[in-house]
Image (cartoon, rainbow, N blue to C red; front, side, top):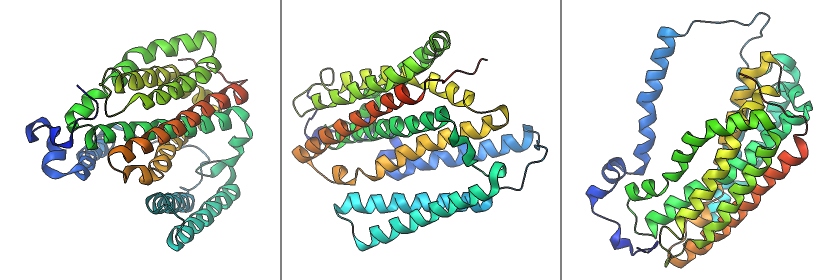
Length: 319
């Protein structure tokens, strides 16, 4: 079975994802609404209130500034990617976003240790390196994980369900092997897996060049998913534990939340920059896909270089 079957071969409606087929792809985001409501109700019922002695007021100004600033920058990148040029709207929105981010930094500096994101933490080389590595790795990975199923569905003749099944090696490997990698990293130290993992991810993305109209799933998509999944499996568990170990006890929760936000930010920016690829069709789509996957591979490898050069003193938090 070729990777890129004709679009008419995408399968019957009954073969596709129910939500995608009946309500459209935006409906997949609605799944989050009942889950979020359930989380709120559980928190109200079972989570006890806790207060940190000496803590300041909630940093509403910082939260609003960084949300609006990143939103502006992302929108500007989306406009640039979709149009292939820096329009007046993209430039003005980007400059406004930069100004808001600068305002956020000023607010955080003024609030000091009571800031939403204490800037003093970035004086630690390991903390800075771990978050830079997270941004690069998850940005590259998110771009690949968006592009692969998109190409399979739009130009490969796959239904949404088939494209989802094609990605199965990723969650299977990460859920079964990550605990073992965490234990291994605890014995040998996290620096080696944090260096090797992203480089392996980059190698997997380079294999994306095997994905072509004439390639089968097993010779095209599967090697890309398999190698990338192995790389992420090597890196994820040591990365999470190392982030928690890079700060003092009172900042652990903040460091965890910030690192998660950095990972999402990397994916958001990468996705915003893919408009020029997603707007192509047929052979042009595969050309853009191959170029984007090559760039993602370089970015993932840079994450490994960051780990090698900046994480000399990194350690893992013991359970």
